[in-house]
Image 1: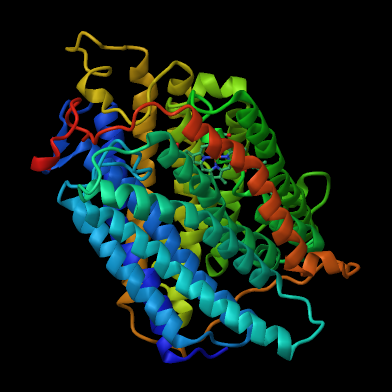
Image 2 (image 1 turned 90 degrees about the horizontal axis):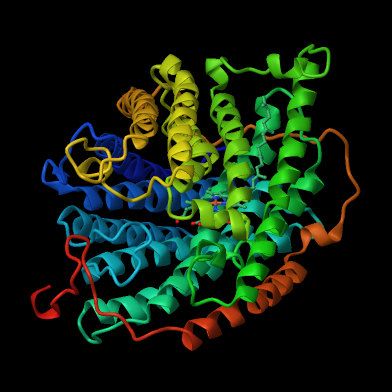
Length: 560
Ligand code: HAS
């Protein structure tokens, strides 16, 4: 379908800006494995220190790229599946707020005034520019959502009784979760962090701030994930040459994400004494429930892929796996989505380990954790973003993709890289190797009295994986920017491969109605978070003064 020039430009800017910034994000990822494997024993390289680089890596890759992509992909799904363009004013306000916010946060990080990592936990303090920039990025994404709600309501009026398309259902659910969870982080930023970093108040309630962060922080991971799930359900079966096994299963999975994405944040805080045991056990149990929609997805998508394989002539129990279009460069999205799914098998299994209250105490704050999350956010999420970004770039500019061989090989290289990288991290993690630590300064430095020789092979393995991942990313950038500068060769348009269902299912009104799910969502959040909130006031110690990463003493606010 044709898309107006202004909307094409909005979507393209929202894809181009984060992919450009991603060059820095990937560079700092490589630097992480170099520092930590003890190849260098420095606290900084090219005047960017370890924590500054780690902050750039996390914020660019996990917050900026994902938020911009979710908005750009959201615009595209709403326009394509509802055949209507949302209001341009809202979309423009959204884009500009996100750009200004990102530039403010980037300036703060590059100038070394915000080395607080992507979780910006107090009592680490950043310049107010960083917090204000992060807030603008989030508020900007809300405006896009407000525009879609209006368009969606109009579509409903014009199409009474018609089922909401699956991709649109996923987009609306994703941004509803996002809106609710970002209210907490907006409160944290505007009411707690900004006044503190502006010097209006001297101290901060650390447990409250961290609890508000994780109210947002775990829902954030599903906000990252759901665009990939939309691609798995609505597009992958068609890309694979088959059909979707069950659309009702997809709808159910998406609605479960709506009710359970938020009330599980305390599972990031099991080791924090401020929460009562009962609060932790309740959120641990809810975390097991939030794995259910992913199990539903695993079975539904595997069945859809099996159907595709059999249609391509596969025989036997597992023969379908061999018949899928892994190397079809004119159908390269398949490679991105299947590699993401394979990584997610391991990412999901390690997540379930994390969710266990007792096992968590073994792995919390060790390298197991980045091992887990690189097989989730750097797995299905990142690969779907890469594949779909270059796909949309080509369609919306009317330019053929350059270096399709590179584009097709990227996800396989990335898959191999991440598997090696995460194995190194998790192997080290179960031996106590700490995360977020410049190991090369001490533990992997033979000249240090703290030298830990057993962490050398694990960090070396991580280095090998990290180098393969970097090579894969460089090939992607090569193809992406070559496509940007390619000549226009066809009429720009928007088109998504859209899966049909294997068999028509009974229409269940509950799977086409947001209201009951929204009510349950509010109830579950209140049940899970009222006790957590009470705990942060009941058991917090004295409020804390600010700190910076390079000094164990509190910051002198007059000289900050
Ligand atoms: Fe997690 C920590 C638990 C999913 C990201 N997680 C993190 C952090 C990040 C993150 C970034 O309970 C670190 C935050 C920090 O900086 O401290 N996580 C879970 C659980 C799940 C889970 C239970 N996480 C994710 C996803 C993420 C993500 C998704 C990003 C997108 N996670 C935790 C916990 C912690 C945690 C604790 C805190 C730990 C601590 O102590 O700090 C579940 O949602 C996972 C369910 C997934 C599955 C897998 C389904 C498999 C599928 C693939 C099927 C394959 C097919 C292909 C069909 C059950 C769908 C077949 C075809 C062939 C050809 C083979």
